[in-house]
Image 1 (cartoon, rainbow, N blue to C red):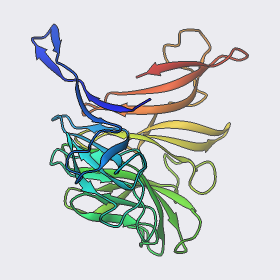
Image 2: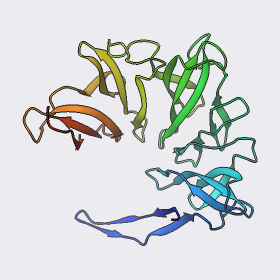
Image 3: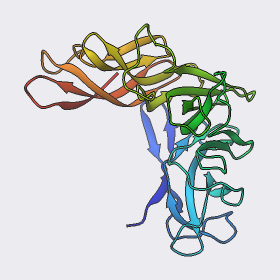
Length: 290
């Protein structure tokens, strides 16, 4: 089965109605990758879309059926070949700005990194970790973007030895001016509560940021009196949901929040998350909450 990336465009027709425009195929496995210099699309990854309609995603390419190059698609063509620039592989996620700049996570000669099609290596394994004197970057993962504010975000690993094992995790923000600063990290408690797990595992990879960069939503595993519990943390300052607490507006009385996944948040601070609801001894149920 071939994987295909589609564009589905909506055109507003007044308040009550919307007209669905034709679906446009922009990348399909096995067809030529426009702008690649004669390579075919071998694989497509998760797309990111800005409020203004720009689309970006990572792609695997090659002359036949095997991948020889990795790069970035913007809208309908390849705009960056990471392999030609000395990078290998890629994670599935990217962040894209309204300016067209894309951040993704390939491997460099130094190790796991985040890279921009316009500014090259932003941070790579073994580099000094921004915001942490004496610590080094261990990994860089899950890049995303606040598309209209011009900021990039990602989860990084920290170690006190270059090339050593991960000791903590950090949630990084790169400003539109190019400075990289930590938003939160497992090097110190959050909400006055210690992190759960070792190696920074309490800071989960699942997060979201609003397009204007003002609202952040992280899933954090923290140690409370009842033990390790997931918290849905808004802007690093408050837990809007906690695992084990009574589920708000539960469909069955007595249900409690389980674990969280796939958080989303918009410019107004409205958010949604998928959670499991628990009613012992009944099985868990999946539900979308906001």
